Structure formats: structure tokens, C-alpha cells
Image 1: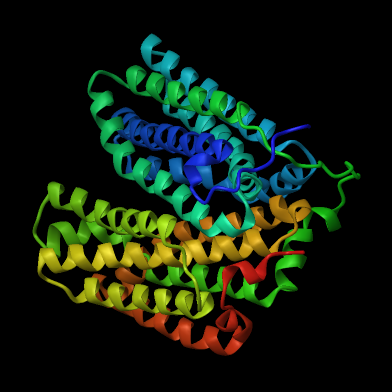
Image 2: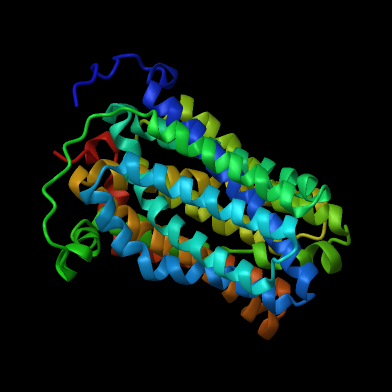
Length: 412
């Protein structure tokens, strides 16, 4: 397609495709966060079962694991803008289905599980597609800033979405789901207005080799492999989210309001760093910075685990989220800059599969370890394990430690 050249401006606001992409991210994450709150409240109201709440997470997890690699293959073979817009439109339809069922009184927990499973399948295609789309919207020199700015959209929606969803649910689940549908539909419309240049490669027949090409590519790039592995292990070992209710009630003695503040603290720290990096990108020593950030993540995990003072716990969680955001920006920039466009969908799918599952497995690991050893020892052990992973990672992935300027990783 014949499009105007990408502007030479260093301001992200002058790049219209990225601005549209940013607002798309805000809309779709807001919709998803509101829907998650509404589904959780409604399932528990219908069944009164904590086990059924667990099934909601499982219903989203399974299709992601099963479909992500295939989704990455699709993202590399078809128009990414069309794929993402279609996924967002389908999410709007699913949200409208939940709204109709709630308003008409025929909704059941089984219907919700089915729609949530479908939502997980749709998001399995949306996630790697959006990650692979971003590098085409700004010049390569601005990609680290664009990654950070995109993260501000995500973190802002994560902070605002649950509260907004809870307020809307007071008027009834149908109102909450309708608002979700509006957000998803808005995201779809904005996505279809994005214009960018990309030559779609020939649609070769899908084979196991082509579907798993993302894994093969990552294994051949030690710096990218190291970044993904380090981030995955840190989240797996250092995840404290699942144990926050115990800390709020039994250790910090704050009650439900304190739990809400504790949950918001990491996102606030992450948003602060993302805003800074969107204006002041890392100039040098990107690899060492990532190792240092993951080490801070481990230290802050230990501090939070040992803290009995609520303000100190909040500060530890904020720094934990901030250090995690530095790691996310470096990892995402390395992946996008170091991967050829024809492979970005499949590589992004592998990244999403490992990092996404590590969040959920990390919460499971924290719960199991806490049941065996106690809550505080479980959190402290996770932080110590993260620090050990940093030391081991520097020995196993020296190429990652030697990465200086992120732009030097640009694939030619």
C-alpha cells in the first residue's frame, strides 16, 4: 500500500499509527480488566465456590497454551492489523453475550466458563499479533521508547480497570459487560484505522517446522533466550500476588482496603518507570541493566516478605513493579529489534507463552510453597531464588550481559 513516509520527528505523538495503537491498547486492556472483575463477582455469586473461581483462570489458561504457537504463525502470514481488529470485535461479541445472558436471566456458571474459554482463545491470537505489530509503527531507533509508552497504556488500564469494573457492577452485571463490549468495539475501530507498510510474505503451507520456528529462532539467539529465561524465572520464583490476601489480613493487619492498595502498588511503580523510559530510553549497558533490575526485583521480594510495616511493604512492592518494568522494556526491545519482521509473530507467541504462563505458575508455586513452609519463608525463598537465577544467568548467557545499546540488536 502507498503510504506517506514515517515522520522524522522524535516525538511519539507525531507518529499517528502509534498513537492509534496506544489508545487501542488502553481500550482493550480496560475492557478485559473490567470483564475479569465482573466474571469473578458473578461466578462467585452464582456458585459461592472458590474452586469455580479457579476454573475461570483455567478456562483462560488452556486455550492460550494450546493456541499461542499457531497464533504466532497466523500473525506472520496475514495482515496483523486485520487479525487484531477481528479479535477485538469477537471479544465485544462475547461481552455482549454475557450482558444479554445476565439481563435476561439465563446466564449460568457453565455458560460463563464457555465464553471465558472462547475469550482465552481469541486473546491467544490477539496478544502475539499486537506485539509483532508495534515495531512497524515507529522507526527502529524509537522502538524502546514505544515499548515503554505502550506499557504505560497497559499499566494505566490495569490500575483503573478493576475499580471501574467494580463500580459498574453495582448497577448490575449487564451494565458492566456492556461497557466491556464498548471498549472492545472501540479498540477494533481504532485498530482498523491504523495504516502502516508491511509486505506480507507468501502464505506457505503450515508445517510443524514453520509453527515451531519461533522456538528454533530464540534458541539460536543467546541474548534473546537469556532475556526470556531470566524474566520467566524471576516471575516464577518471585511472584507474591497470590499471597497478598494473607499479608493484608494476617501479617500487616490492614483488611480489604489494604489489600487493594497492596495490589495497586506494583502497577504504580511500573507505570512510573514506563513513563520515564518513554521519554528517556536506556542509552547504554542494556544487558547489565536488565540483570540489575531482576536483582532488585529479588531484593524487593525479600524486603516485602520480611516487612511487618505497611508503608515499607508498599514501597517494596512499588520498587518490585518498577524493576520488573525495566526488565520488560529491555526484553521486549531485544525481541522486537533482534527478530526479522517475518518471524515476529511466532517469536512473540513464544515470549507470550513462557512469560504469561510463568505468572500463573508463579502464583501456584507461591501457594504451594506457602502451604509447605509458611507464607513469609515462601516469599523470602522466592526472592533468594531470583538472586541465584541472576548469578547463574550471567554465567549461562554472557551475550545478554554484553548487550550495550539496544539499537545494536537491530536485525538486518
